[in-house]
Image 1 (cartoon, rainbow, N blue to C red):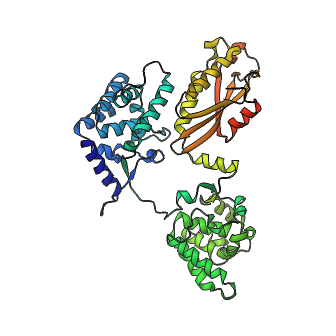
Image 2: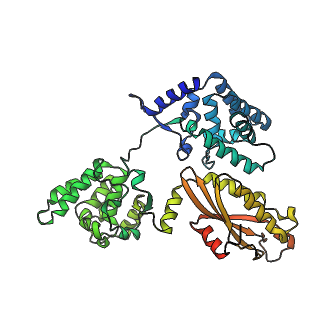
Length: 457
């Protein structure tokens, strides 16, 4: 009953932005977790009892490994909603340690073997016994806690200092795949003017209304009200939002004479009736003042515009491999990446298997361990079993995995044999594997199985 009451209170606090306060609350998700910079932003801490606050203070003030293990287990053992959320959000979401702050500093102390053992003990009823490889053990606990307690984790929230000022964006369902606009791909946008992510039809915000007004004025070419167009273009600039800047920049700077289809009504109109002036006034602080009256851009002006190009997107259909790649790039698979790379590195020393001639044992161990991870759907090397690998050389492991945001297929390049910087080397120098890089690779596994005639796995 206490837990349900706490959840209801948390829900209400997350939903409301209080009058007279600058705080706005958001639910913690896999994507926004790393926006948190301090513990004061966590609502679970704000509502925590004295016991949890005391233990957290002790954790902050100690760096002793044994003491941290005991304290972390003590937090989980409290078994309160706040203590669970505090540990689960650290252990069962991806933490970006490249952003050092109070939040990530605490993450390094919480995200320990003891935390996973405690979660297994108190929340999974010791479902996983000892004997698992540490990387696999962490991955199993991570997935099991998320599967069983995801709704509880998603009930926690944090506050952000400012609301999003960029206006309403397109709903995710209306923009399944977003592609960044550049001078090359803009010319492929000929099917629908409102493919732009920053525009909505019917209008949903001020920018949409102003753009719709210009469109109607432009379509009446015979009696075009140029004064109204100039005023409307300036009004768009006055919005000073990223979306408004994207609109002005796209139609004033990005090769307007090459626009096709539904983009033709805007062909040169925005630039001709004050687009560059609005950009200069409201976004570039007058940097273009000396170049606005020239027939051609001065090289300096071109550089200024290029250096200040806004990040804008348009929506594409999910029909091609290229589109799948764009879609998969949107998905946050950093935790899965981390566990797969850790596994490759763990089995990298070939000396334990008898040297480089037994590399296949290491590759099999990597594949088997990764295959046991609950988020992995399939995996396959780009080498058929009957074909020996070259030493030194490279091999690629394709992995199809599930995340909370969708499926991702990636390939992981592994170097077989590490050569010294010089040309001379001893045979034992080859006795190592090394992870090189990973990339989005939709269809990789299917292609490799076809090449091997499905003889493998």
